[in-house]
Image 1 (tube, rainbow, N blue to C red):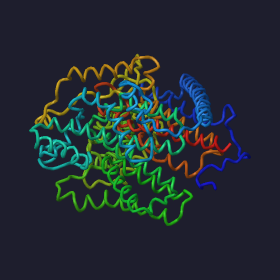
Image 2 (image 1 turned 60 degrees about the vertical axis):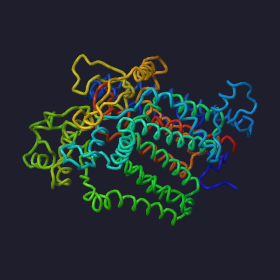
Image 3 (image 1 turned 135 degrees about the vertical axis):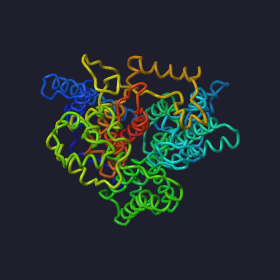
Image 4 (image 1 turned 180 degrees about the horizontal axis):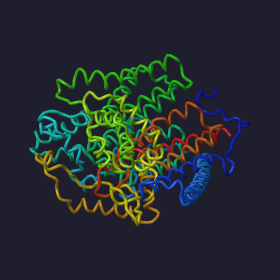
Length: 604
């Protein structure tokens, strides 16, 4: 009996797997984005009126067409070979046939990928132990500049212009409490705040290792075979970016841990056709993880809410869809209504400004003000001046094509009309649409380019191109006027310098350095997976199956609303932490696609 939501494997189904140019729209559209992103990241403008732009588009399209074509063939080959393997139901965890200490030691690190919690705990511990050398070398861990400001607020230090004892929810108060708890406990027990940073790194890495072990077990349940499963496992265990990032204290990394666990529960929920909602333990656990993921990062609420609401289009029972809608509504009311109105005042939490959600529109308006400072009516100027913290003239002067913070000012004027501002924004955009287009691609160019400028400012001729790669922090950097009063930034230690050298090698060695390019994970891999899913749409991909990819793709799409994307050494924002989830999810999503193709091959 075939389960609903899976492929029916009909021989008569139309399949385009043998068509050489099937799905060409994906690499061609990606080529267009890269042509735009490359020019925007290097020159802060896109030469739509020059032949060179269309030459770049053609070259990028050809590159991605070839890459996607042979990547698809490779996935097909891996799935076919894996399907032909003889299944062996053996436990690889202990290495029963091992002889000698070395083999026994290696056998201990052989992953099990079994369903039992004991097996998952052991696999999680294996991942943690393989990450531990990096965590020790990075002692006491890594604290970002804005995280230091968050924690300083927890201990009553005035930050962001707030009164002492107040916590500004521009950075989620949930994270502020979480990090503050680690540091408070550390100081209470040892008299040192630094130990708390290290304790946080250990706990976060251990929990993440367990979540990844659960994911790998789930992929095996779906039918992912031994070789691709081992490749995924090895990549997650040995790629040094993972342990370094999980040794970091940052809201983006904390959110990734919760979001990764929530996504796994979402996968199982869809697999069960939402029947797991009937299990009270699952429902409570799912809601708690939803709440943690939503409260650890503002954008997390919207990813989770949209993912749950899109379950409406799936082939599920109506009453189970109603539960999904109910969870979404309750989650929204708690995060955006109950907490701000009933808890914030008592806890001395100052609500964050709406400017974070409007950073992109404000940045585009800033480009128009910079390019056409006099093309604005008095009414439009008044609308802008009464809404933004800066005036029209100040926005024009402070515009930076690669970061939105200089024009947003981190807050809006109180009592301003958002609707009036958006009407003005739309009117100006209709007068200068290409200015908005250029502004958008400049701000988000880091996700869709392999090269760009080396500074966060208007580039000048001759334009220089630098690789846009992940720049992973290996030392703590805090504001001396905030958290620096409690625990000053330390000079890079020899061991931290060693880790930095490892990253520098990865960034510079040919072929290996491909793994360090931000665009590979932020746009190329998502586009390639969409290409594969499209080509298998009539044989192995169903509507319910596509819904499982929704959280991943929403998180990728929402990268394009961030206020900065270009990774520049020593610059602001550190976009590596913004796109890190795309790197972490990539092996999981590739495993999901491979398991779909294998199911099809088994049916055939």
